[in-house]
Length: 307
Ligand code: CP
Ligand code: NVA
Image (cartoon, rainbow, N blue to C red; front, side, top):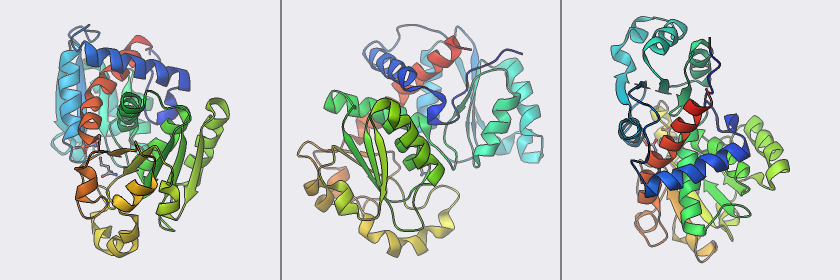
């Protein structure tokens, strides 16, 4: 069996490889139909949760790379009737050049990858959203000319998006601050790993509780939903607890004059982000959504080349 390169969590790319993928993403944005590394091969895009951006950007991206995307609602496959992830991976590997999956526990994607002979890509798990973070870094580079030495502040739930920003942001040389209510901080293991990466890149990870303090002087302000997919029943109870963590004008005013506002989307105006902020002059969310396409094309091209 070949040894494919997978992308299950952000630090599956070294800081140098991340930089290479980001450079290639910028090149692909300028010249969208430059090459066709998929060369007629197919890519399975498997979804166990809803998606707009990830599904569309991968489907369009695979097509633009000269491949055939197969979008699969996992519930309609034999996975839904108990076929194992391992057997599914072995069969898909016989047809496809790569497998992209959005699922729940990180253990599920790890099991799939362990049995796959083609690259497996994390299109969001409960633990991480690493494709999102590459697009976020591309957007920051575009707006601020680079990432190294900048401060990115994430306010809200210490979730999958926060984990990926910690790992990828520090890999890109940023200081990443996460301000979350007590009990909703990112997991320690991620913060420790981010700081370990920072020893090489000069970046650092800090967890805080005060959103205003965290936003002060920040170059990038970022937030995400308070209740992630699969945790919808927590939404109501979190509302009160997270109220002070809204990305609002008060935080924008405390940040750098040229602060870049990001949100992975979908957004809930009036909850985790104020309408005037997401629709305001600092917001880069539509470029950020577009960059999913370019970043993932660069990532797929990289993984295929190295597998
Ligand atoms: N940001 C993101 O992953 O969006 P979707 O859930 O629509 O794919
Ligand atoms: N944290 C969110 C991100 C959605 C793109 C979720 O997991 O639902």
